[in-house]
Structure formats: C-alpha cells, structure tokens
Image 1 (tube, rainbow, N blue to C red):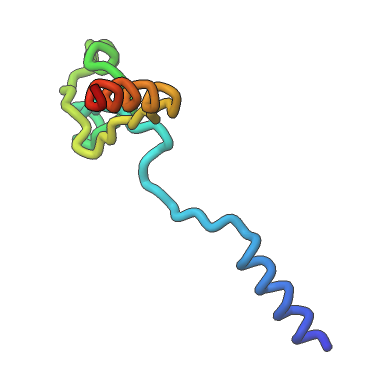
Image 2: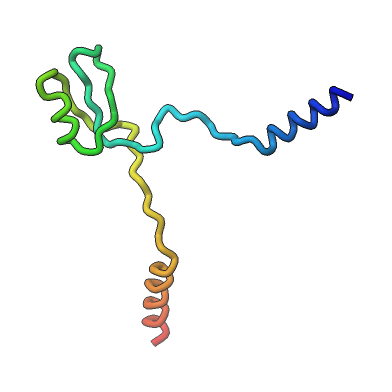
Length: 95
C-alpha cells in the first residue's frame, strides 16, 4: 500500500512542480562588463551603461567591454497598434 501512494505522490510532484531550467544569467541581461585588474580578470557583467562600468572601475583599475552574452529585451507589440497599422494598409490597397 505504501509503494502505490509514494508513486502517486511522485507523479503529482513531477506534473505539478515548477520545471525551470537553471540559468547562469540573471533575469536581466546587462550590456556592459567590467574586468577588474585586481580580481584575476573575471568579468562582472552587471552594468546597463558604459558610464556605470567606467565609474565602477575608476581608481581600482580594469576595463569595460560589451557583454558577449547580452540579450536585448524584445518589446511585445500591442495588439491594437498592430491592428491599426494593418487596417491602414488594407484600406489603402482596397482603393
């Protein structure tokens, strides 16, 4: 009796559990990385602008470079705006 109950609980956990793959990146993808002279050259990619990066490394040494893994945010298209744009083109073609 114990084995079927454990099996059902395991299947329920698999089906209803949150299945998210681990990601090395944070939820926000920052465009700029600082490579510090004192930390062995490991980049720290937590800067939205080059200016933020330059301010951080000033006085301690290092360099700033663009994040090779930066993913630009894709803005969703508003449905009403897309329909409005499409309707203008369809009316012009009908004339």
